[in-house]
Image (cartoon, rainbow, N blue to C red; front, side):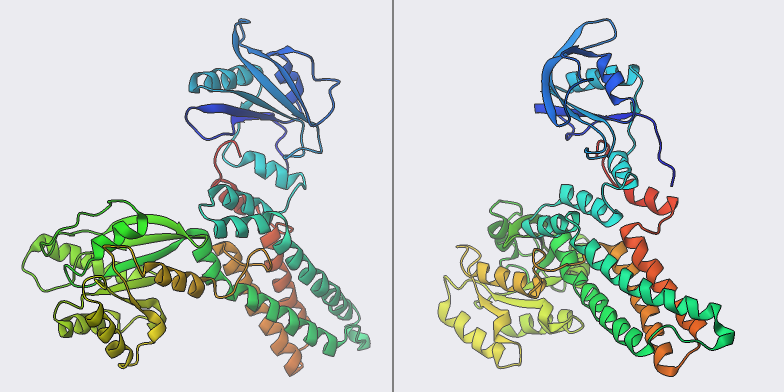
Length: 464
């Protein structure tokens, strides 16, 4: 793809007022453009990766601000181009005036993700690393940060390129056979190719298996809080997020809509969803809330089902069975609430529920009012979610595009294996191998299209 040679500029720090802000200029004319607004030591002879103090002036020569300009010369810059980063005071007016001065001097406003796109096109990073940068910026938990950081460092890309290199070598030998098909010459060792294809398929399958955990690490874990009215759901939500997010009342049916709040625990982002109490009612509005509660149950990754040991147990267990029988058992965690006021009843109920076949590790004695017992339940979810995956030790897939492309690569590689096993002619085997290589190449960007790049980089913020 042809690289745009315009010089671009944008505010690279978050919108709003802060102590400082950074305006980035990048492109072949970055230094001449900057020189038009800079009052200080000239940067033409300055070394790369050096910072300089001076002032910025508008087209009329009026001072806008005292700033620090940091110079990065091509190719040793983020974009691979000459780049100047202006650190100014964080006033929105100052940011706007400096950017306008840069634009009037000859730059144009950068498009979303254009700095990173140029870094990719200039060979400073591959496509998977570029996507990792976007995830790193958006990371809201330690787990999301670790996955993104590993990706930006190129661990995932290195694994993909290693697989592609091995397959390319053998694919080239098969292609060579096609040129000598009339001589009946065999260049590729079928046994070696089959062994390698099976090895790489195993690697790809391991990567795709990590996607469920990776997605949860990256985007957060939805946990619906469900049960009958007055079981303590709203109290539990407030306890989990240490804030009064939901109204707590002894009046049944107080919660009539889903209420969401987030908290970071064990390095993971949790999204807790308080739901309306499940019961039969003639109240139209409450029924709307109950329907939303059922939807939240079905869509959430996990469910905290609250049971009140001081109330009639039979209808609570019936509701539990009715609303969770279609869900995977390991998604349901039963929290027997009010342990602080009814410890004997809660303990007896826990044993009784365990005797029904529900795993005892999924049953917890808690007090939402006092905030006790809940941490163990959260820790259990964290352990279930990560499933032993450590993004700092092994590659974990968290990007839907990567997952879908790896799945297609696995399909075409499986066809390659089937073809080798059944003695399929070389041209058919070569076709499936080429398809596998194409899929792997689109992840790192060694094979790409303008539409793919536009889709990916349009999701970035302006200034990155």
